[in-house]
Amino acid sequence: MKEITRINHVGLRVTSLDLSREFYAKLGFEFIVGPIGPEPVAVMEHPSGVNINFILNASDTITKNVLMDVPDKHTGFTHVALEVGDLTAAQSFLESQNFIITEGPIVTPEGASFIFIRDPDDNVIEFHQPAPVAG
Figure 1 (cartoon, rainbow, N blue to C red):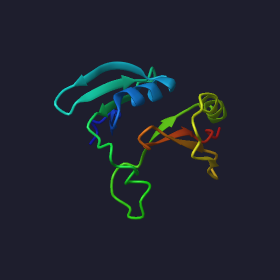
Figure 2 (tube, rainbow, N blue to C red):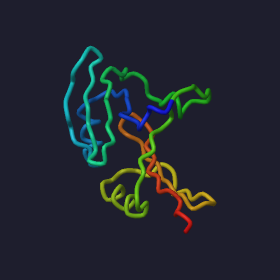
Figure 3 (cartoon, helix red, strand yellow):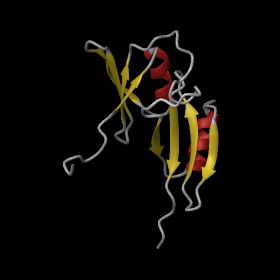
Figure 4 (cartoon, rainbow, N blue to C red):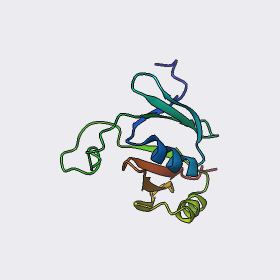
């Protein structure tokens, strides 16, 4: 469908607005509003335009990410990839803020590179530096 112009936001089910808000604020996201609506939902946005809607009704009795950490592979979105211009700088920043790099850095044969972290609910976040443009 040609009318789609970009991803507007990512919906992320979380157990605690306070923990999620603190975590994503360290990544530069700013709190916009919430909780609002029947779910309820809170919204944070990064200056780059990336918007996250936190759905605040996750069960706090679930201890594993069912999309990533169980033997049966369920369907669904497994992670969000945030593009960065300098993965080395991004990794240094993450480590300086005591984020744990859970995987990577990984470099593809074409030269793209990426690392992964987990948020307080074990949702996976990728930081992705595209391969250099040949030219």
